[in-house]
Image (cartoon, rainbow, N blue to C red; front, side):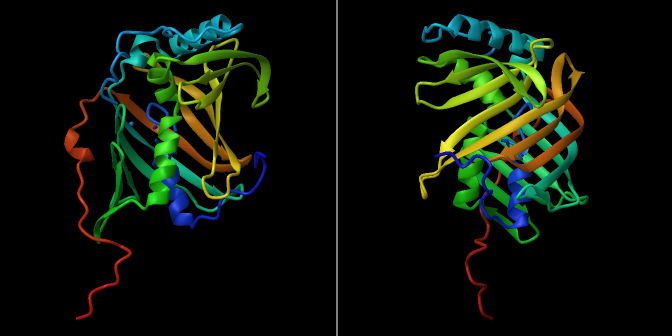
Length: 299
């Protein structure tokens, strides 16, 4: 039975803020949006088979797949078409807020975020930008004055899941995979707005539901569910996109709100974003220099 409307898992406020600022996510928007997820705020090089293709590929046919395909293609075009699909990297600045049991537990954190599609991300927080989270492939690191530590396994699993289900991964990767199935679920209401609801399911039986504005064709909300391997309960995560602005030919949501089992979990607000800045690979390089769980050495 889904735990929609239940309580978010108890996490320390620092960890919540960390997960919020890093992913997304991207990837979250997660990448292009990705976030900040956090962050999820889950990250931009080219994914194989994606560049130069603004149309949904061959989907497993069903009674509603044609209508779903048309709506998804309209959404991709509304987001910027080729400009959106060919984003390689981003440089962002903004402010992120975390919530616990739906209640704000922070005054917000400034962040600077750099991403390279599909799986590299760097987030710098605090005014001094002296706390850094780096994600490269399936590895994650936290960099502070103490040194560089590996992300804890639970936090890393959360990040990777949000990146996998991020809007950018779904529209830029899933749709080009063999065995993807598209379903038109009919008209719906999302965030008190009329919407067209479609579901995208990949060959791994992972599914994302999109709520698309019938007037602007822009995504209003994204939803997905997953089963906790420990308690076997189903969790529902949602992202709401708002305050779209045109930046370098790409419609970009300057406000992204994430919900976990019905509770608001995080919000991020962009101050600025730049696309295709030739972000250096060195920003995503890191290696572990200490273990925060290891007792200090006695002198």
